[in-house]
Length: 168
Image (cartoon, rainbow, N blue to C red; front, top):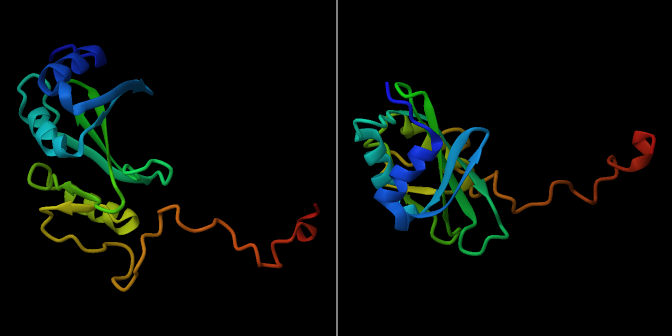
């Protein structure tokens, strides 16, 4: 087992994908990279096949919505782990809400199937090449993506939310 640190991992990734890495930071002892959307599948494939790094476990894929980031409103976050080296990596990539396409990684990680469908279901991110890009938790008839920040948190016309009912 190699002693792989976040610094070593970042150096290896910068050598291989320097132009695709927009930024990096270490958060909660996990190296986090912001990368180009077009590099996701290529980078994850390289990480998976590299005989030293061995990032062969996909922990999670999730999304987030950032309405204030022009042409980068939707974020897709990948958490991968090298069990053998006991190190984790977080990859983030941003796509425009008007064209939320990103390559599917189901060809690399079969566990990505449901995770990508869930991210699509709640944020509308389209994973191109996914074998069954349909909703997984919400009803098929739903014509919006419920975790986008497109609606107010509370209905200002509701009278039962008045301060007087809460002792204020």
